[in-house]
Structure formats: structure tokens, C-alpha cells
Image (cartoon, rainbow, N blue to C red; front, side):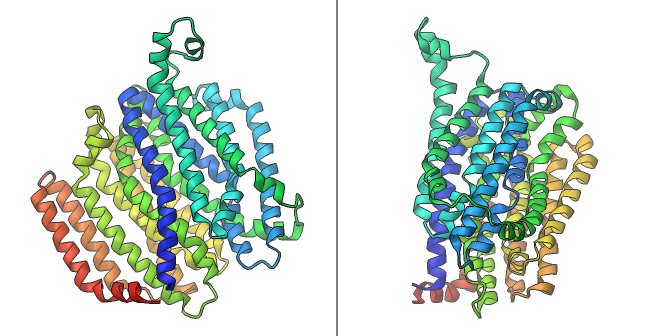
Length: 486
């Protein structure tokens, strides 16, 4: 089987591991928007935004560092032992400190202390499975990885449906029973995080054998080298978290109190329509990251990376245009409450922004392979500064539309900077002409359709047909060679 076919097979399995869980999570959006008022859905979104940031902090770049050192290590047990024990003790310290400070955190954030406690436990349990999951990816065991990931989200989805839909009905139908005792009226947000906590706990239990197979010893010299590699990744991760989620937090703080959480709810619900691009980019990244490291020493590695990035752009361009053309159809499946639909105007911008982010991840191979992770941190910091500056400048006048503009500006800048710096430090022969054509046509068609011909599926269909034919005539020979290569 050719290199490309093997890569695409592995990426497809990681795609299943990403798409199926996200689709399960996807089903929670209509559930939440049906059952929760906009302000309560906004509060849930804000808590999840904080969780994204603390997930990055608790991982402190150790996942990427693990791949970097594990792939070339003579003593792989030492790498997994050192990284696992490091994350274990840092998680335990965080757990103790955060629980002691729970009342202060609740007061500072304006979030109920019970939700804070649940969130702390979810964060710790998720941190404890980082290296077990990374080892599965590094060992090329995507099926087992996929089963656990899908199981986690299936449990989470099932518990959400039980707590939010069936538990109130059962409590009403069985007065005086234990079910009525379990049910707490008005505690919907709490049940959402209890469901997450149980799912995370079960995932940790499944992966706990990893902790019995390692040597509980930290190699100090190895740990220092791993930390030097991972800390810039941490800085980049924090900047990414700011780019990805801080707009919700800033929206809450800058908008009038009586509408802030409702606006966050509208924006967060419509943001979910970018999930198709996010799924594609995430699945691709999960499959590609171990591949980048394992093939770094191959003589034709730069040509391989260039080809991979080109076809990421090809498939991503098609996804962008398809989702934008059918966005009004999709909104009725995902966001059934019309009260949220006023935020649809941000959808094309958010999808394009996430496409830029996916391209950035593909371009970022240069600083990971050349051990210049500091450069990745600098790029991410630039993106975070743009995110914060534009959100603070635009939100007071444009509300969540300002957040969407900030997101596309930040990710677009990061993509451009990574390409420019990569050309200098780790030249890769990208097909700039065709990549630019595919990217430019898909963005132009998407914006023109949505803001000028929205709802006209004849125009949208014609655009899709033209773009599909254009891709076919330019790429058919190369794709056939890849498929036939042995």
C-alpha cells in the first residue's frame, strides 16, 4: 500500500474517531437550544470556553512533546513514564489547589460553585488520559482510540438526554420515589456537567491500565528537554484558546448585562455550523501529526508534506462551499429554535476562519520538525493579540459580528505568518498557484452566495458544479496516480 493510501486510511479512522463523537455532541446543540433559554445556553458556552483554556494549561504541551521524543527514542518506556508521571502530579496539584479556591473562582467568574467543582474534576480526568491516548496514536492503534473516544461521547450524550429529557418526566410520574429525590428542578446546567464528569471518569477507568504498565520514575534530564520543547507549545496553546473561545467571555463582559449571555448563546449556537470544517481539520491533524514526525527523515519528506497540504486545501475548499450553500438547511436541523437564527450572518466568516486554522496546522510542520516551537508560540501570540484587540474594538458596536471578524483576521494572519516563516526555516515546495486558486474561488463563491444569493439553490448548485469540474480537470491525473500507487 502506498504512503499516501496508508496515510489516508489512518486519517479516515481518526476521522471516524473525531466525526462520530462530534456528531453525537452535535446532537446536543438542538437539545440545549430547545430546552435552555438563550442566556442559560450562553452560560454553558462560557463555562466550556474556560474549560478549553484550562485543558491547554493542564496539558502544558506534553502531548506534542511526547510525539517528538517518543518517535525517535531508543528507550520509549522512559518517554512515556516521564511524561505520564509529570502530568499525573501536575494534575493532582491542580486538583487540590482548585478545590481549595473553588469559592473564590466562583465569585470571580460569576459561575455557580457547583459547576466549578464539576468542571475541576472533568479537567483533571481529561488531563490524566492525555498520554494514554497519545500512546495509542503513536503506536498506530487508531481503532482502539476511536472506540474509546466514541464511547466517551455516547455516554455523555445518553446521560444528557436522560437528565434533561427523561428524568423530569420520571420524577413527575413517580412522586415519592428515589427518582424524584435525584431530580432537582432548575438544575439543567448542573446535569450537563455531571454527564461530562461521568463520561470522563469512565474513560479514565478504561485507560487506567496504562498507569500500571509504566515505570513511576521521572528521568530528570529527559523531563527538562521535554519541558523546553513543550513550554512554547503551551504558550501557543494558550494563545489558541484565546483565539478559539475568549470571544464568548469578552462578549459577556463588554455587552450590556441584560443581553450579554443571550448574545453569547446566539453566537455559540450559530458557531456550531462550522463543525463540519472543524471535524475535517481535526481528523486530518490527528492522522497527520504522528505521520509528520515519523517521516521527517525521509529524503522526499518536503514533497510529501506539500502534496498533503494541497489536498487538505482541495477537500477543505469543497467543504466550505457545500456548508455555506446548505447552511439554511443545516440550521433547521441543528438550531431549531428560530430565536437563535439572527446570528446566521456570522456563519461564512466562522467557517472560513476555521479553514484558515486547519491550513495553519498543516503549515506548522516546519517549526515542530525543526525544534523551533518558540516560533509557533510567537505566531499564536500575534493571533491572540489580534483576537483581543479586535474583539475589544468591535464588540461594543457590532456585537458577535465583531467577534467573527476578529476570528477570521487572527487565523488568517497566523496562516500567512506560518507560511512566510516556514519558507525561510524549513522550505517546502507548496503548489502555491493551485492552492491559492482553490482557496480563493471557494471563499469568493461562499461570500457572494451567502450575502447576495442566499437561499437560491440554483445559483449555489451552479457554483458547486463549476468548482467540482474545475478541481476534477486539474487534479484527476494526480489523484489516480496516488490511488494506483503500490
